[in-house]
Length: 505
Image (tube, rainbow, N blue to C red):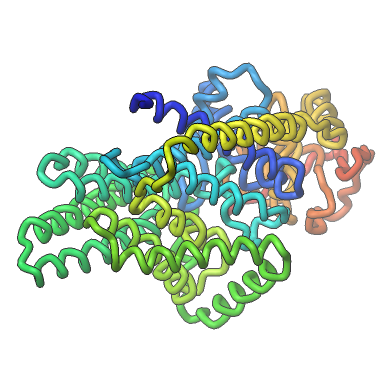
């Protein structure tokens, strides 16, 4: 009989194989842009550099503070002698491994007749299958699973929500013996909300609704213990979330946008039309059809299991698996939002159906070892194929980028560029402050950047590419020279520097 630690170790080995498969599938596609080159995705790398260089920054961030993501990437940057692209690739693998870890928490303790490790791997396999269907370079595509592999698009929030569900399930399963788990739920909720208020919408509200329903069910059945358990869970979940919001107060100076402007209930019809269009685009590809069928199948299984679950913990997880996507989708439309990333629970919550009741399948003993051996060989082979694909994507030369960074580093001067143009060169410079984020009118653009960059007061060159909005320059301002760097151009104003206007977000 396999020892418990051996089984868990095998589970992590399988998770590593799936992580390599998922990242390796994504790496050669256009969606790898979100990993290595996307303007939003690079903020964590910039924050990590600032921390390791001992700077005294004045960050202008969105409503998201990226605290867990920045801590992880800073640690990677401190211990791994790799370039930034390689560290982003490692972070992608770690995010998938962490997903397995939280799914394993949700699956609960091993009991006679259960197989939580196996079903956690099955859930991770389903996630990998979803990632394998995604290839668009657009951050607004309804390709949501692959966003977990980035350092920016709410990966820590996804993990925090699932960890909360797992701790809640274990608390419900253990009863009085699991009261210490309430502390973990409170800390997870506080840290997650502090970093990203979206945790409240994705985790606190759906899990709170399910908890209230289960507590009311227990009260109707005169099950006082279950009712008190539900009330305690609800109180701790709410308390942790409130504590997280209070904890954001000291960071107010760094929050350039509270997110309130994203809430526009009067535009619900536009939101519905926008999300419907994204869904139609997703369903126009074979991969999108397969992914949608998989998600709908998991949702159906969750609905059935939430009624037939043999334990209260399994019922809670199964109910969250379908209630969370439903509430998030309805809420996103009702609030008039228009960003696909807000809908990530539509793909990660249904995975909970696979770990809600991880019952062991009845397989003849003589077939178990050969079946496991075949699965292990296949996973190892696919993982081995994924690793070099990911490494090749991370190491792929970008001559245009290198041209810009070499020119800027050699100049010893400070220039500027617009957000979507300048973010990638900025991260790869010897000194990121040499490129200042500007809008088209040369005003400082304080968004996901250190505002001390603007202290320089003026720039002597501008970097532009196809994404650059035409500049509005002062009268008579003409570049003395233009350096061509492939998809980039550098407009050199060395003899007549341009003043930076007032910064705004």
